[in-house]
Amino acid sequence: QVQLVESGGGLVQPGGSLRLSCVASGSSFSSAAMGWHRQAPGKQRELVAIISTGGSTNYADSMEGRFTISRDNAKNTVFLQMNSLKPEDTAVYYCNARYTKFGGRKVDYWGQGTQVTVAS
Image 1 (tube, rainbow, N blue to C red):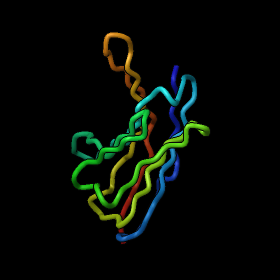
Image 2: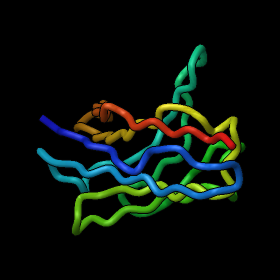
Image 3: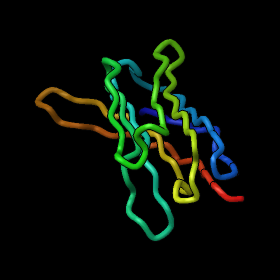
């Protein structure tokens, strides 16, 4: 089993910054594409950012330029640096690990989430 544990969430003022961390265990971290997703009350879970095994990154349009995803394979950790935070960024942020099996089948694992609240 793959276990993901997020940390770093909390309360921050608009325009502030926050850094989320996700530590993975139970499988080969370097073999997984990693991502961050978020879900606000009453809304569908949405993609925030992803980083491939090779280090390529992609961001949702509303986050590009403000958020940065990175990974440290030696520490089995993926990060999400969030700058210029807006109240609309308030949500539960989830860490995701995606493994590609033989035949192209995708297997996803999720953390329990960490609350991010942006308010003055």
